[in-house]
Image (tube, rainbow, N blue to C red; front, top):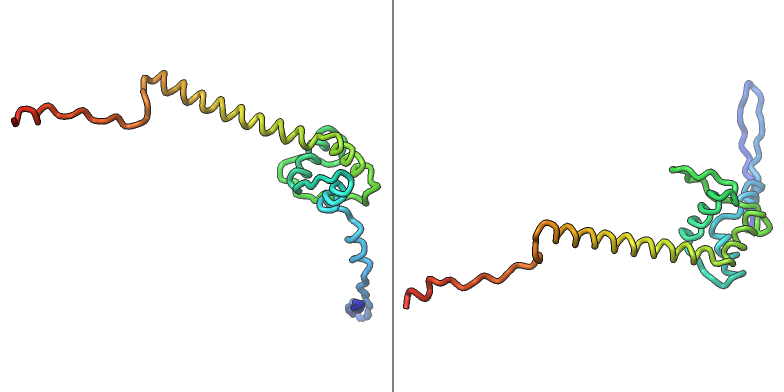
Length: 151
C-alpha cells in the first residue's frame, strides 16, 4: 500500500501557502545506522551475538580512547548513528570486536567484581575476629543445675 503525500494549507498574511509532506523524511531516517544495525553486522561478520549494552559499553570505551567521535559525559542520551557499514567508526568497531576486546573487557570486569567481593568478605572476617566475636550462630544453652536439687 503506497502512502499518499499529505497537503496542508497554511494561512500567512492573507496568502495561502501550500506545504507538502513527502516520504523523503521517512527515507532519511531509514539510512541512519544505529546500535541494532551494528549488532546485526557484527553477528554476520563474526558469528557472535552481542547485547546492546555490551556494544554500547565497548563504544564508550572506544570514544574515551578517541577512536569514535562522541562526547562521554553523564546524562548523554544521544543515540549512536552512522551512515552505514562503510562508515570509518563502524569499521573500527568491527576490527576491535574481531580482536576480542569485548570478551577481554567482560572478563576483566568479572575478575574485578570477584576481587572486590573477596576483599569485602575478608574485611568482614577481619572485623569479626578483631572485635572478639566468635560465630554468629546461637550457642546451645547449658542445662540448669537447679533441676538436680529437686530430686
